[in-house]
Amino acid sequence: MPVDPLALALAVAGILIGGLMKGATGAGAPVVAVPMLAVAFDVPTAVAIFTIPNLLSNGWQSWQYRAHQVPAGFTRAFAMAGVAGAGIGTFVLVSVPSALLEGVAALVICAYIAFRFARPGWQLNLSAAQRIVWPIGTAAGVLQGAIGVSAPISVTFLSAMRLDRLQFVATIAIFFLSMSLIQIPMMAAFGLLTPHVALLGLGAFVLVVAAMPVGGLLGRRLPPWAFDWLVLGLLAVVAIRLASSAVTHASG
Image (tube, one colour):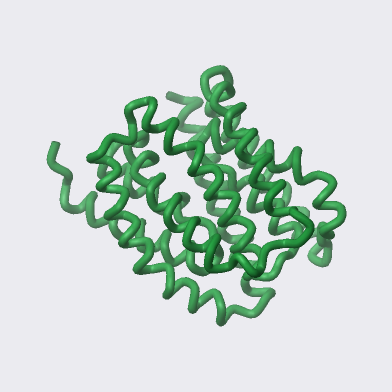
């Protein structure tokens, strides 16, 4: 079926903006790009298309920022827990209403943002984060498997740790890469990631990788407080999107 030129233009714009966010913060590309792709295609196809940019861009950033990982095996534990959770999330997907999951995830983000405004100096230190990394990583993976986005838990968790930009990007890239390694074979098994869709995904990756260096340049110029606020802004966008989707699913 031919794609409407305006819808295709919006999809391209969404992918480029997502690439800027990815380069600046290490996260946010699917939040912007997938809804825009869904305008040109259907939602499952949009999600399947973006699994390829997710895999390749996070693989690239994982290597690029490998020297800045959080110490003591934190990143490895976070990623392994996420992979385990993603498998559980597949079963949650078919047994729990999407509206409920999305609504709860949106509330979690809103509560965290409100807490940050109330306690602006609060920080989750590394030793405390290591004690809860397995349940938090698993919960983020469950959310990824169930609704296709882990940011309400994964990005919120790392934001609470107040990591610097390099550590944040290094950690979240490996976590997202692990999710992609689970998501891609599942998409292929369900017949969503066909050769044609994979080719579209490679085209999307070209756009993402073209925008990422510009986003990276902007991210490097941001002072630490501005990067912190940028991540909070990204979380607010995620919360709005999830709340909107929950209302749509509940009324549909």
